Length: 54
Image: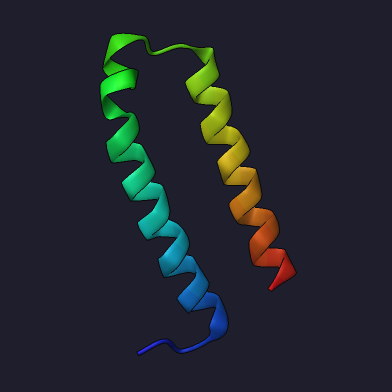
């Protein structure tokens, strides 16, 4: 199913992120502020660095 180890981790990361974003949707609607945006940027950086680490 997975071509490489990277693909497997990428799918897991996407799944976890989507679950996290669904959970955060209510909070986001209440107050869409810079904190949420910076959290998203930090998670994107973490994803990128984990790609490089694999």
